[in-house]
Length: 275
Image 1 (cartoon, rainbow, N blue to C red):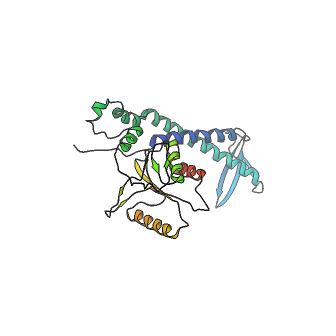
Image 2: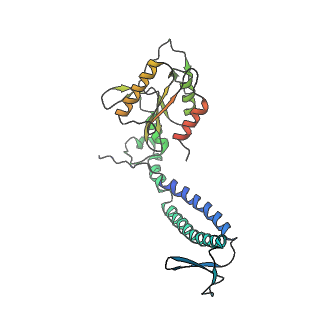
């Protein structure tokens, strides 16, 4: 059976976000529009020379000429006309998004729930085209792996998730990931395109984008030999098509500048922004 899978989409979330944003702007502009003085500005392009006439109502066809010296008044009425056009455009887009969201009616969620709501015994025999974030996370976490061995000489740091890690900073990173509900594996082997295997400090799963990410903490950057090794690891990632800022995260520290928990929180917030 040929396998099909739907790519992750933020279409519906983005439509809802856009609608909320438009409604907020509409409310602000509408409030401002209500305070404008009566009348409309009629602009005449007289051989490249703009002339301005204030019409008090719809029956006033000629209007009252306004000198360009009255720049503040001209600017006020031009802004009024702009705001009037903007309110119409905002209203049209809001209405269009409302129609779209009403017809879609969380269609993407319903597609995922067909698999999610099926009994476990049935799901074992199904090849889904899409599934919920929780199902993807569970499936990814269930894949077994064998990490690197940690020597008994290494200080014992045990995370809240029960793994042993190599440093206090890695302990803080692991616990922060767990608090934020970000699935991760510690020192999970990564097979590169050149056949070599690396062990990223943390392999993360970005559930929304359905992709793995890698977090390397470089903890002894004031050690020249360690720093040289870290540079080589960076080059290995890049050769494999894994680039910093895309699927690769770095944090660094030296003996005089340790990694702070606030830095860890900032990194998580940047890469895993809440919806």
